[in-house]
Image (cartoon, rainbow, N blue to C red; front, side):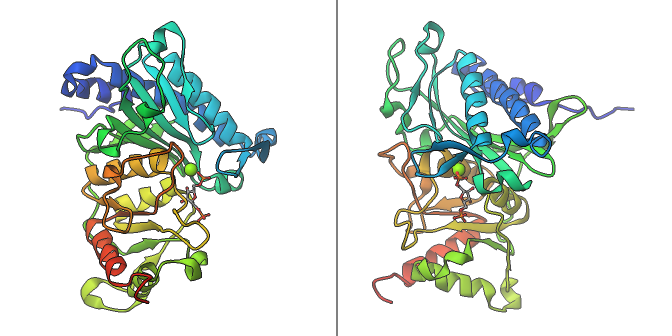
Length: 343
Ligand code: AHM
Ligand code: MG
């Protein structure tokens, strides 16, 4: 009798690498290095309650003007080291660093890839044992080999991503990634220390019942968002309304839940954050790539596909609407009808 065998992350990415003829296994190796760093960070996060020295704020303020948590700094160091050690990454843009980090050793200078990363997303949840995540995005360099990478290598639209993914440090730890051939999920099995294939081809429902938005900001929202929220709350059995409101405050966790169950996540522009809060390069682009690969959608709420936005700054912010296709389309409809000019 045939027995089903557990497939590890490394096994699956090696199996899939034949789909990237020119990558010579490099992309697979890179994803393995990310998986390794994720295990180290996961271990630290799991021990956070016991090692209280790693909880709380570090002494720094990052480029976003937000105070960094010690675990933010730790995760940033671990991922940076792992990516440099891979020898195939020539530079990274991290939420935690003002400028791009150029890997200028002999090996890395020839590396094919640059990475945009939010090493630990959901900072406000770090100290309280609520799900947090890592988000990453992988591009091929555009500057010639042997030269130092520049900002231009990072300012590529999301459509150019070679791969993207996240790790969710939740009730179990998962790594979800795409290389443009669907969205695949792996669950960490602590007894063998491996990410094991658990969600082969993730398909998000076309419609769901969950809307996720920080309603505390309601009065600062654009009219279209306010009206859409009311639409979500109204009763209509034909469209399964009212929807239910769920908001963790960790993008990865809110997105992951909605990906599986069906729903919409919105972080709009607000009166106090006129460009939105979330960052295009290392939060919205990778999540948008994963959403689309799972049959979902991601826009800025003003009719623009997130992946087609041409970035101009590595820490650029954007308003973000993502999740089930029908729900994002409905929200877009409200945004186009109820503009702030005609209300
Ligand atoms: P961070 O990168 O500093 O953690 O900020 C990003 C986070 C997202 O994970 C989350 O969706 C959002 O900020 C929550 O913001 P708010 O507390 O304003 O609702
Ligand atoms: Mg973040």
